[in-house]
Image (cartoon, rainbow, N blue to C red; front, side):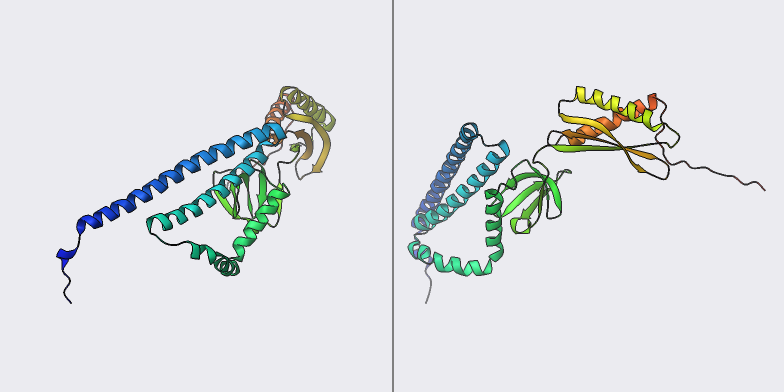
Length: 279
């Protein structure tokens, strides 16, 4: 059998390819428009819900991103169906009819994905974590950027973004619920007067409290915390607004160091003595 290239209608082929390309382009454009409009509508709905129903900003962001993800997954599914039916003339009724059997087969082979979705659902239902919360889980600590159906995104303090599968969140510590505690331990020399040092420290604490609005209670000098090899450790505790405890601790350390130096109170540090032996 000889294949005759002259019998090929190149014009008809080009027209068919052009029609397929135009159909595909139209579907993509419609998808992009619907996705953009849907995302804007979801965002506006959550903005209104935040104002009317009193949702916290973190909770609103969490539910908003989750809703957008579900909306995007649904759009992608319909995009695939539209491309198969309108571009490639593939009947999708049989595919949809067999989706139950295929889904069951996938379910047995993708139990981890099901576990991710179920765990993520209960994380949201029980309000264990919201966007912008500072958490520790699965060996990572950082700020939650997104709680999805499968993974939770945690931004580390060095900028790294951790993708944690929800099924690995067996234990979770949320550091962003309620007020936090700032704790500072300062060591003074055994030769210094403890009562005088506590008096100086408390005056510094009172001054810092008057200047910093993020401090809710304290700071207060609670007393001698420990007796080290070369220092007497004095502890200061304060209650601060959420995520402000580190800034308050840094401010207290600086102010305490300056006040102790001004009052001649030594903060012990290691000394090295060199002995030179001459023959």
